[in-house]
Image 1: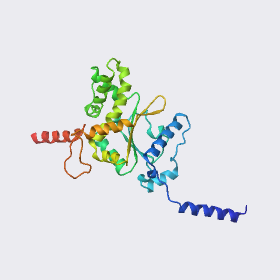
Image 2 (image 1 turned 180 degrees about the vertical axis):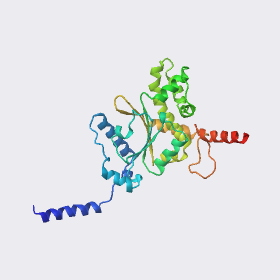
Image 3 (image 1 turned 135 degrees about the vertical axis):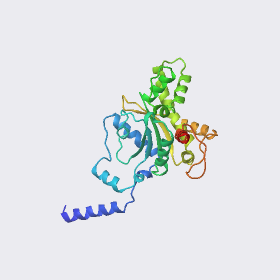
Image 4 (image 1 turned 60 degrees about the horizontal axis):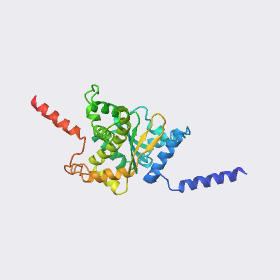
Length: 281
């Protein structure tokens, strides 16, 4: 084929690409975003990771484009070093909006970060990702069982969100040994985080009810790399229960008056305590 013909064909292809509408990750539905995560995890487990969006071209995009054009899922995961979120889903730069905190708990800061991921980065999917061998759940379980160890000053306020999950797991498995309670407590803790988010965020509840966002729970096995997805219908059950709770947050936006406080709203309480202490001096 002559060089002139080749140049003409290449030029035509480039023009066609330039004229084609850009397909961004935000064009994905929640189900499509979830399918991407599942496919990525399958590649990771089978040793066939593609490591997408980690090259220099992606960095250039990150330096010039809005992440909202690319991120397709918001995920809250544990800080545990055994849970490499982008790797286990075989995702890259700008693909995921990730919130990480010990025990994947949802308190005020986490709820605000999640709201940002869903309402401003515009991801259609939210995942609460628990994991096996969770140290935070183990610590709370040991404490409830009466043989916990001393914790640094700020840790109890961090992990107290996990206590209701552990107590439910114990009630559901009254004859189980502690080592057998922990897996059940890890699952319950995922549901607790969903509950706490719905309690603290009227905006997220609104987006879920309007079909703009899908919420799912999952457990990552740190020993196999596999993500097990929890029953999706459980989320609807939790949402329905929260909608009946008079303590749920009713105010969706900031600056519009006072709303009801949800579970774990400790920062404001501590601020008020601090002001009282200052007034004494």
